[in-house]
Image 1 (tube, rainbow, N blue to C red):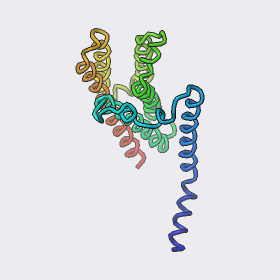
Image 2: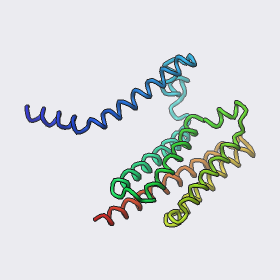
Image 3: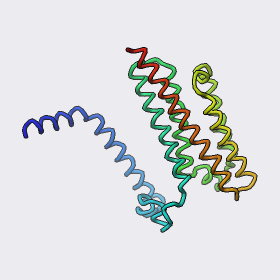
Image 4: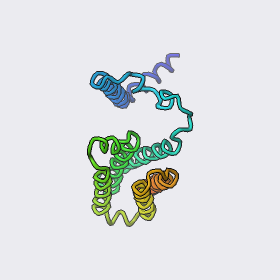
Length: 213
């Protein structure tokens, strides 16, 4: 029994930093909920419950949309994991910066998709094209910044992703009732995006690990 307690307390001590990081995120999230409840008068249940449960909708509603969101944030996770792994082995490595930049970019795209940010701001007078233009410029800037590194990756996957996402926007602008075609292009673009970064992170990390051995 005493040995078990020693192991538990030892584990707590070694995990202190991670526990505090988790608590910080929990407090931040709960504070955001409280802020929106007080500032906008939004009921707590509308902030914490599943949208389909609130609207009493079937569970399959938004199936493809949610699948795409899962992949956006999966891309964020593997990019950040790759960044920390490479940075832990080699503190100065352009590959880690490449993954950090695209991890942050994926996070922005994922948040936009999850909370429909560009649609919401479009209702307030801002053109959706402005957001798409900014995203395109950001992508181009990141690629140019790491051009040599970009061509060392399976870049055709990212090009296919960009083509599919651009096609989704074009279809929506041409006829916003073509839901299947629009969202088929969109989810295809997200899948190519995820596969590109999964492959890139794996290649970068394996290369650094082999060099370090």
